[in-house]
Length: 265
Image 1 (tube, rainbow, N blue to C red):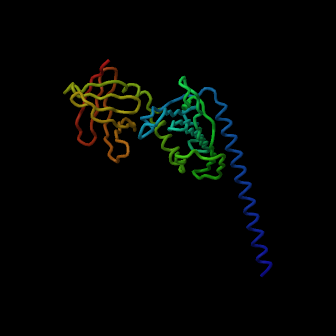
Image 2 (tube, rainbow, N blue to C red):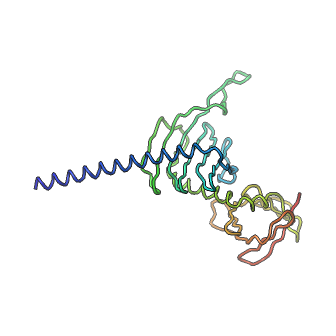
C-alpha cells in the first residue's frame, strides 16, 4: 500500500514538473514572438475613432491603433482617458491568436496653473498599476500584477473576448479599406434630397428632412454593408450594388428596395 502511494506521489510530481517546463517553454516562445513583432519597422497602421470602438465617450481623449505586417494584425494599442488616469492596453497577436496583453493605469500628475491652483496635467502620467497576461491557444496561462489599482477605475477581466472584438473591428476596416474610403463623405438620397447619410470612418449618420436621426456602426462582409445600433441585436443589411465618386447604390436585402445616393462634394 505504501509503495503504491509513493508511486502515485512520484507520478504527480513528475507531471507537475513536466507541466511547469511546458509552461516555461511557452512563455519563452511568447516573449520571442513579442520581440519579433516589436522589431518590425514597416507596419501598416490603422486607427479607429472613439465612436468606432467605444459605446460612450470618455472623460478625456481616446484612441485605438492597429499595426499590420504582411496583411495580418500584430499589435493593438488602446488608450482611454478617464477622469483621473489614462488606461493603456497593448495586445499582441501571433497567427491571428492573442498571445499577450499589457494593461496599465496611469494617473495624471498635478501642476500649478497661472492662478496658483493645483490642476490635472493630462500630458504627464505615471504607472500606478500594471498587469501582464500571457495566452496560449485561447487560454490565459500566466498573469503578473504590479502596484495598486486606481480607485474608481473598473479593472477589465476578460481580455481575450475584448481583444477579439477590437481585432474584428480593425480587420473589418483594414480589409475593406478601399470600400470604406469610397464611402466617406455626404450622400444625398436622390428621391428626397432633404434625406442624406454621412460616413465617417465606419460610422453611418442618418439625416431625415435635414435633421439628424441616428448613428449606426457598420461592417462590410463580402460586399454587404451591415448597419447596427450599439448595444442592439438588430442588423440592417444592404448589398453594395455600386459605389464610385458620384453614385452610391444600396439594395436592402430584406425588402429588396433600392436606395440611390449622389455624392456631395
